[in-house]
Length: 123
Image (tube, rainbow, N blue to C red; front, side):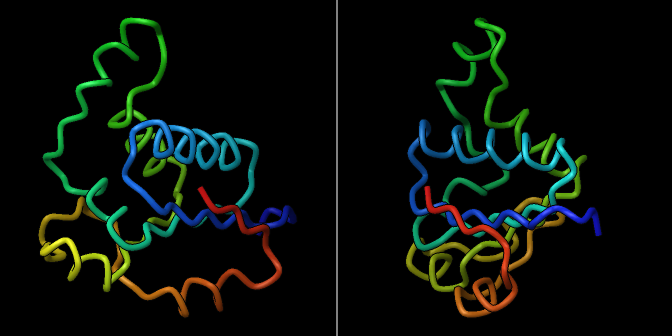
C-alpha cells in the first residue's frame, strides 16, 4: 500500500468528455501513487467494449492529448482496477466476453464496500 488514500471513481455514462475526464483523473492519481478503482455503472459499461471506436480520439491525438484507448492502456499499465457493473451489462445487452482482459465484473455494493475510507468521486 502506498500510504495514500485510495481513489474510487464511479463512471455513470459513456459520454466521451465524462469518460475522458474520469480516466484522466484515474491515470493521474495512479501515477502519483494512489491506489485507484474505477467502477463503470449502468450503461457506462458500453465504454469498455473492446472494439469500440471513439471518433473523437483522432482529434485528441492530433492535438497531443491522450485518446480514450491510450488512457485505457495507461490504466492497465498503472494497475488501475476496472470493474464493469453486472446490471449495466444486462441493461446494455452485453456479456463479459466483450470486455478487455483484466476488467472484472461486479456490483455496486461490492464496489462501495471495497472503497472503505478512500475518496469517492462520481463522474
